[in-house]
Length: 404
Image: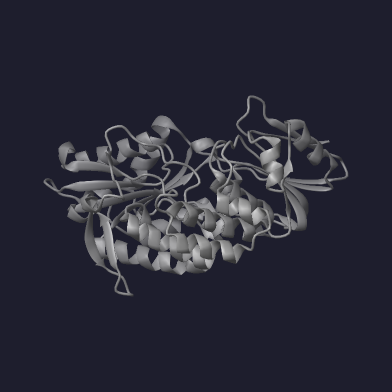
């Protein structure tokens, strides 16, 4: 027997066994560090920028520095401690350093986040709903104004800190972890959400263009990109100019993008946060689909307790997707827009595959969505035992399998 355990947030992990005549591929999530080791890794990165000056060279005493913490930063407190410590060592007064965070890119203004970002004590919170919390930065190529969190616009130096990660539902790089639209005005967030709901992944070019404009106009030269390891650890830290830091962190995140032949009949996936919302399920399904053949089965094991929105439910009940998306757009309701986007991304991800869900949702809810319901872990373990070919994807919502 081939055997592997898979943690999905319950007291006991799944024990997945395949027959000797079956094939099993188990993705091994990249390892990382925690605590003081994470702080040291971050400090070393800040001091060892390859093609640009280290962080201490970006500031002088008297500068007002804003450290923009975007998205779900792994080992947040230790990373923030290392950044602030470096700035103070460079002569910046601790009182002139502001840690700025933003709420999740959720249904109120974005609908992208798979998990809620951890909040750090003492950080200033940016509220995208308050127009007074933002300031005009510039206009984009189409002439539309770009509004950004006022502390960023007013700062002498901005240090951008964010995770670089994958999202298979978006076809590659995730949106979370970037300054834009994390620190944008609610109306700007909504414009991007609207474009994505209309055009799906085809609208990502608009996001990349807006992000480039924001970084250029803001004059960001200090960018710290972090790559998560398994179970919330810190796998890598890359510091430098935005493009350089992004390229290096993308290479460091290659461990989350394994080469897998997309011919398995079954993929069993877990989530990085077992209680995350349906956006994480969508990303995990997309990863599982990239590792299975058409007509295969994707099983997601989680502790999900919140069902998807009304747009998603109506689509699963047979309503045409494009009509539902148009209805959500016409409503002007951000919650419906976010729901429509998730539904579009999910429909593309699942395609003709079957989904089996092990979660905290009751059986009737799952069956109303016309998904397979795994009432107990034993059901998933039996699926694995019967499979002729199986791929196991821990923390699949952060995984981006590439076809071998």
